[in-house]
Length: 225
Picture 1 (cartoon, rainbow, N blue to C red):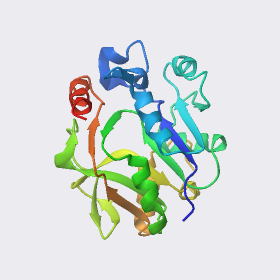
Picture 2 (cartoon, helix red, strand yellow):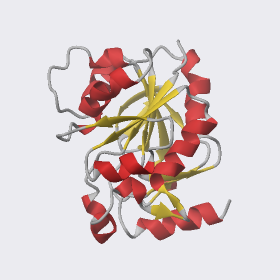
Picture 3 (cartoon, rainbow, N blue to C red):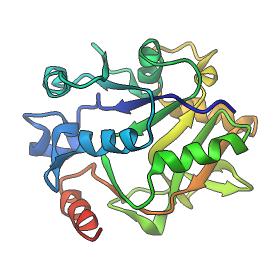
Picture 4 (cartoon, rainbow, N blue to C red):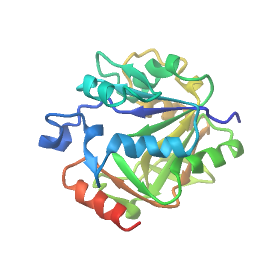
């Protein structure tokens, strides 16, 4: 399998669950332990040495654009929210061909580089998407149910594992989806139907930063490095 050379950071959401914290700024620019969520994500990508990086934007896009103006990062502006699947498709012209790393910008990590862990595993699978997951019991700040279960390296829908927001995906799996606005869940379900949705378990610690009360959880996690 060809190694990914590009990454897309999802940063276009409205961040409504963050309440007053995102009233005047996009969620990716909220600081956790003195560093914005966006920089936490971009640092992970930089460490994995990917050649091209894009960030998609929508809510208060000009703030993210100004924040990144001196960095070699492509911006994929969405006039209308396209969700994750539509957002990835819209950003593809900004990226190199081949598989793409995608990373949500509303989590923090402690331990092994999550993207490097995915890249190391990618050559060993025949997959349309490889998702990095964590057992529900280790998913800090995550109050919803699980997303998947893992069987012989392949993922199916279940409650055992939480998707961490990091993956490698082959854009070919988007071919044939006619919608302009759609979730990557649609692509994953298509891949799973053919046994081509794979997953691995993250070795380190992870915290969802989707709600205000999770900020302290994330900062506690990072303070214990």
